[in-house]
Length: 165
Image (cartoon, rainbow, N blue to C red; front, side, top):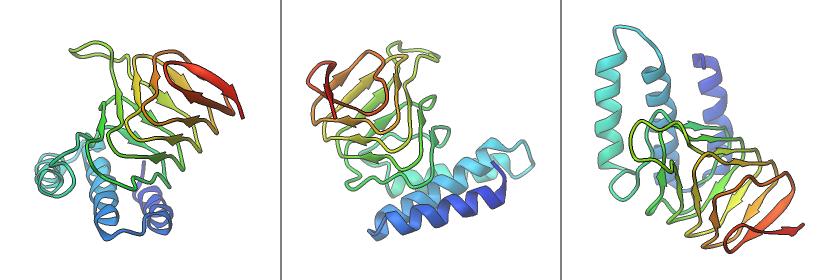
């Protein structure tokens, strides 16, 4: 991602995230992600700076690594208890509520992280675990547990119970 793409993503994020704390989180995440992805002399100082800022602002009760790929327009209405794997991929315009876990199903150095499509909604307390692919325009209900792939345009509740939209 180049600096212009980061700027465009921040503009989209700014239009969707209205709470000042969420805006600060998005700015910190986008800039930190940009510097961490570069192999320049600024890489290490920038990484340390953004990790400190993140730890003292939004990451007190969350775990959202800078390496996580988060698409533009993603909204976190309540930054509380959100845990996302550093290898996870989240598409554009996602809404991720509080107490959501998006993670690996193996403890160490796993690349078995979820890949989420565009325009998804993840309800409070939902868990998406393992090497699963969530399609575009999917709604995941509160406290749902997802361990299998979900096709586009579906509603999921409970433990992998797929409903038609």
